[in-house]
Length: 567
Image (cartoon, rainbow, N blue to C red):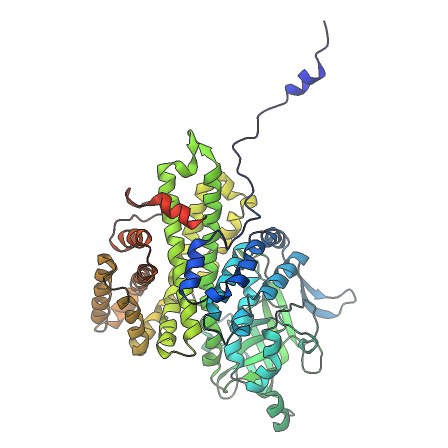
């Protein structure tokens, strides 16, 4: 009997052919393929910056995507001591993290709006750059957001601003752990919440004691007066930042301080990291618990007015929560459409299956509405320094958008995972990372209830904000019957609520949701694409929609919405 041929033996172990697989998404151009974003930026006044934004599109969809995987696979490590036992309180990051930050700072994520502050629409342009960046990595957006947002607060102390702002708005990233005075570019963090209070920052127990030898001459030269801080912060994000805006109690009341990592003598400041947070997501970024053991800081703004001072920073970080969630949903949508355009089942591509089309079109519609609202809020933020009505609109629209856009992210990303099936549950797709990240922005900088109460406060105590909101809706009057009817219902709901504040507060989530949908509809009406507008109004305002994605009517322009979403 002859021995079998060698190739026959090998054939016995061939189990299957690898076919019907989806090609890698990256690299791709995240700007050129995003028509809704490009239109929104033009519409809201940032079109002049398109060359700068467009330059970041291939980077965000290429190099940054690969770096994002690496940075999240290699979490930051806390190094409390050096090899000789000296306390150093440092956090070690993978080089990929620093490279992502370098690219983000270079292209303007934290600084573009301030570097072009003389041009209307600079914050809109910066919104687009941040939107692109965040799709690749979310953790690095945290320190860049706080660096961007600190500017209005620092301006309350002109002498501090003169020293720090040139470094804050620099397009240079320097990862070295050295005094800020030796750097051309810095990052800024924030520390507000404490164990006993959380969002109730007025219950903070950290104490600030005026340093006796910080005389008037030195105070006037540097600004704010020098203080020693003793206390703790339960959530201290990006602990390797060069300085932090923090809250602490003085004899007058809660005040805001600029706390550098190195004191004015160049020594390490007495900021003791207790541990890094073991978080659900946001893995590339470090968040910590810290104690201040006599750390020195300069007061920012009026003593006893710390909450009001730091809220100017919070207003911008809340805007960035919207940007972050909208961009997460955008990336999840891109992943879903890319997969379904290449994967076949039951005899044809998934994207050709009627029910899958409904899901994808619904997600595309949702994503476009969130992007449109986020860009409109960016325009309001941009114009608020020049236009009181836009400032009033920004005040209420930021809280509305922060609530609704961020709330929708987790369910959205989960639906996108289903479009991939089991492939959407494994890390190679990046969707598990997006899903872990999705709840963050609805929690950070004030959770949903805080935002709803903020909206009620603006409606009842700030007539100009209420007027600005309804003036925005009035610009779309006649654009769709369902929107006109919704505006009348909102006005009636608010009029009735004035008689029963408790009832209005208990229903505020429902109210803010409807306000958000009406505002999104109004923006889309003015954008002028009737197929988008009609589908949104009929599904979101007329009740012709279920409780999950993929429940559009059969007459909705599904293929159009999908193709529009990702060219």
